[in-house]
Image (cartoon, rainbow, N blue to C red; front, side):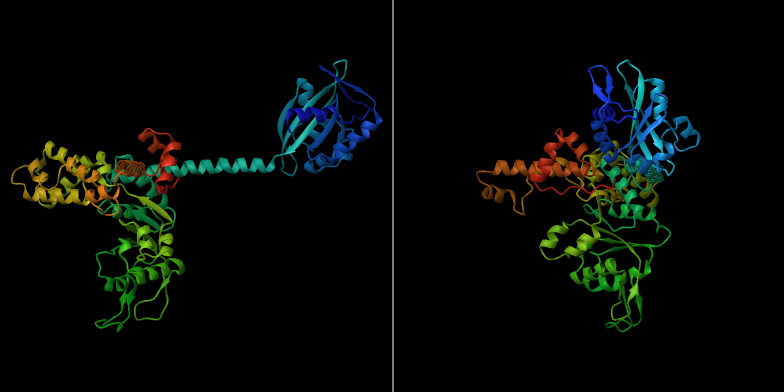
Amino acid sequence: MNRTVNQKTAATAELSDGYTERTTENSHAFSPNTETEKELEVVLNSASEGIWICDGEARVLKVNPASEWLNNIKATDVIGRTMPDLLEEKLIDKSVTIEVLKSRERFEMLQTTRDGRKLSVTGIPVYDSDGRLFRVVVIEQDITEIHLLTRRLEEKEALTGRYRDQINELQRAELESGRIVAKSICFVNCIQQAIKVSGVDSTVMLLGESGSGKGVIADLIHRNSSRAKEPMVKVNCGAIPETLVESELFGYEKGAFTGASHRKIGKFEQVNDGTIFLDEIGDMSLSTQAKILRVLQEGCLERLGGDQTIKVDVRIIAATNQNLEKEIEAGRFREDLYYRIKVVTITLPPLRFRKQDIAELIDYFFEKHAITFNKQGLSISPQAVEKMKNYHWPGNIRELENIIKRAIVLCKGNVVTEDLVVEEFQPVAEADVNLIRADFGGANFDELVKKFEGRLYDELIAQTEKTLIEQVLQYTGGNQVQAANILGVSRVMLRERIEKYHIKKQIIIQ
């Protein structure tokens, strides 16, 4: 209740010795008014707030029904008694009336009732025309639910803080282990997301270009999950012939087909209680997709040629470099499976967005493969490193590793020079030209001129703006605040462009 209402309640409170209030500018004066007393009695009894009225000696004169209920007391047990007496008998734990009489000012405090309720209590002094403090009106409000919510929020914030510290510690451990190379913000964000989701036993979708490190992130999720002690298997769905995918995943019974001379256990059974990584899931046939969906929905499968239902408990991490939404539109991917595997999505940035990581990745792969090919004394020239840092890397990390392996193998001296790597790729300038000439819907640049004649400038500007926003969002891991800062635009403008171009927002785990 606000101050005005509290004062109004105090100003109209019924007083036991037959006085009611008459307000002047600077004081409270009182005169008898029997009719008003009756009206005020009705107001007090119907008020939802608890109301006490005490005299200048802290003696209780009036307690309304709401206060009886809030404090679990009876008015007859407290009226006529002083607040010190009630404190001594522990009928109340604190007295705002005593504080008001001491300070001669309005006073507020929190009070706990005998049955654990939390009350916000306000004491208001009432003066007569001679300036004598002869009444204290006390207003009580039940804030038990608010108090509980505040405590829960504090506990949740403390838990969130501990969880955040654990995630940061795991992140540091992963980076220090040497298993993952990451300094760029965009890839560090991916690591943070992966560690967060590792503790939640849900399916995960990893999106990114071929060779961008989806398998590494899948390893990270499994390694930090509750299934870490159980097996993990990786299946490249695009590398297995379509006729063999189902038998690889679900197994088969003896005699299921020509050449099936024995029973074979599939990957899902092999990894029961563990994790299966389905790379390039977009290459699966619709019939295999239906069986994957059944595993997700019902936790069971049947081997080829068998009729026994087998229960399995497997966490699925899926990955693809395809646009599955377009595959759904084309009828090549099941929409229901798409939404079952897309519980959490992590989008991995291509290597060209990770310029800060390239030099460290070069050192890592160079040291690794120099040992592999017994060329530990080999070094790499700064010019070669600089060339690789400025390359566009359409093949991402896999291409980087292969180029370094090839350079080590072909090197005749003690230093891998620029010429050993430069012949493997085109310079960035040419790659950028190809990007500028990138088409819409598969048309080449000449066809674009014909298609958008008269409005080509607007189309190119719109497409460039859309691509730039998508790339920056991918760079920041979907963080729109960071993206807006990098672009130098307001968050409102960024959101407008996201809606205008129907840009799919990144999914972030807070």
